[in-house]
Figure (cartoon, rainbow, N blue to C red):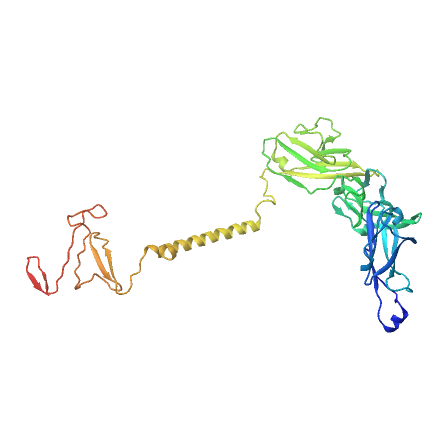
Length: 463
């Protein structure tokens, strides 16, 4: 944003104020052959305007290399152009405001950077870079003729390396009227065995770059490393009197120069170089097998496993020669066991067992509560019972005499006596029909009248 100068000294004395000229966008990065537009704006109408590119003035006209944009009366003065290398630099608009004759042109400027995609290479310039594990190696990334200046990062596989391992030197380089830069980034890093066969990349980054742009250089790593150490191993599941295989897997790069089985500290059986013969009749030696470029498998077969084998330590000695001429030896120790293999880490641990115990206890508690509720007639198990209110009569069947019906009063003990009600209760029909259980039920009729009762002999007895 650039402030306009005071239009007239008189207006300045009166404090009538000034205007502002703005330009958009500012500090842009454009690609060659793209059409670019810039616009200058004021808060007052514009009488005329010119554009200056790298010090050269241009009077805009439709259909020319530089075309005008905007409406002057609305305070707009714009430019449209197809970008070439010559347009890299400073673009400025010169604005002459309407209604003034003596005021100089007001200016606003922006930097236009024409993108120059760099050339990227690694040094050593090889598709595969060989390094020794544990030793610090220096690798250079050369970024030439870049504009604008990109950021550089190193990637090892999918992991970004810490910038503290790098040193970056930027060298400006002028070609004609344009300035480009060359960048050298030095990586100092001690690679490890696990980095073997990974891709090492030098990547340039910037918001103006796309995935289609050439933005990186890469090489495959060949890491030289000795046989990697392993803890003492115990192999399970051997059966006495039966044959059993002892297998040791290890990694090394390059291929080991010598591999030997050692038994009892005296017997040595060659695996690499392989002779095909065994000096011990109890065992058979297999040839060293490669599972991939750096992984190997050594196997020894015991023809008949004995108790002595279960107490013995089997040793595998692996020797390698590194690129620097150093010879390295690694020993692997193996014990045998006739026991089954213990539960691996993938089994149920202490936390899993505790969770199972808690679940079992919860199930037992819920079961006990349900049984208690059922036996006591609580909750949904009480649906078959009916509570008789005060003053109501309740009839039940005598448990000893199913045909007898006893009527009780809520809160009273024993059958009702002395009632003035006429009770005509029968479990069978008038013709002696069977009750609901299919058994002829006796008919018991009790009738008590107001003035007396009839005795068995047919005489009335006063009550």
